[in-house]
Length: 158
Length: 189
Image: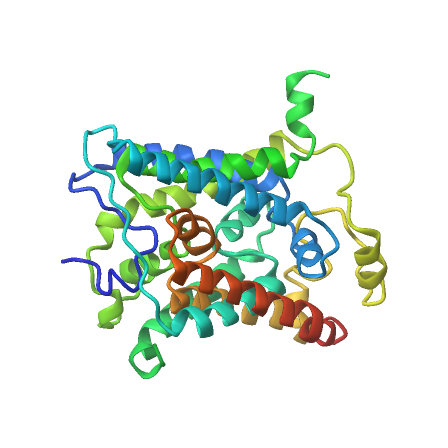
């Protein structure tokens, strides 16, 4: 069964045709560990850094996101231009995003949550790792929010 | 300074940003995976509480790489906090320090301020809004928008997707509205 609304919600998609076992999935665990360390060491998961960003008091977060987009952009364009394959020789596929009003309404709501919690979904996992156990509640609440979206999705403007 | 000492210092944006950007090609090349984190929340719903909702009826096992990835982020957070601890206090913009002091937030020792996010504060109105309502908005908003900072702002913009640009602009507008106009009221509760 394919992922419903692949085109409108193509985030974090596995475009590989290959079935991967738990062992193969360990490589994503390792990339995640590396990523989590960067999150903490660059203080991206700091509530204070996010407040500084939205109060225009520090360049740090703008620099981080700007550099990340720049490197990501160059990488994706190189992959496309030179038709670079995956390690298994598959063609790399990236789902295009389709516009919906959800990007406006959902985007604003996420922005509210981001400024309150000082975290987007990735940092939530890293914050719990650093020992801030109460963030487990924030994560469970975020899961509840996702579930609630699924429940009322058809009644929302898209 | 030894390498470990350098690693223990806070990393500047021009080091962290490119490293995060590199996640995009790494995930694509090692397994044809598009970078995105908030989808992990959807997979958790699909795996644990699908409740016969069509949005959660799909083959989440095919996307289980994403759950390994976020579990890795959790472990990475643990390693960085316990083995690569920054020996110095976290530096915060003086304007923010002054502003937060007016709300009684004076402890800047952690990345997550304990005076706002703790099990004790969970039972206060301010703590409940910040921990529970904030989390709910993150989960609901990202899924409604079809992605978060990673899926839209980094992955989407890297692939020159204008819907992702719209989403990113709205993330920022929402953040500014909250931080500048609404959060001061929440913090004074």
